[in-house]
Length: 120
Image (cartoon, rainbow, N blue to C red):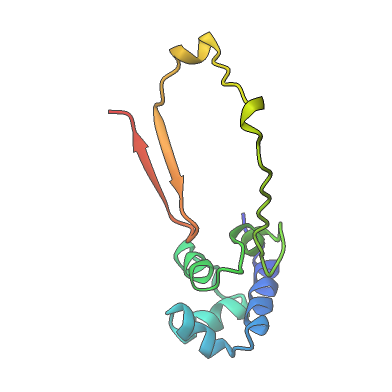
């Protein structure tokens, strides 16, 4: 469950970080200005649609940070690349793995959406 007071503080931090007014922020994430006002006053709680619009419009806003304060803002993805020497790699297949079948695949996209594919 999202702590509304803490969510409001994080939302205000995002708005201030980008130097926007509440009205300009509402326009940017394509919601009514009154929606932002109601969220910031604590009258309304954020909808999933609103949260997804924020993280889509502002890639530096990490979904988990916005919802529960875990992580950091602004979010910068760290990419570590370590070359693997090809001569030292071996493929190990466990016999029990050969009996396993995939039943569901879930793909998460960077905009916060996802797709689910079930085995038919």
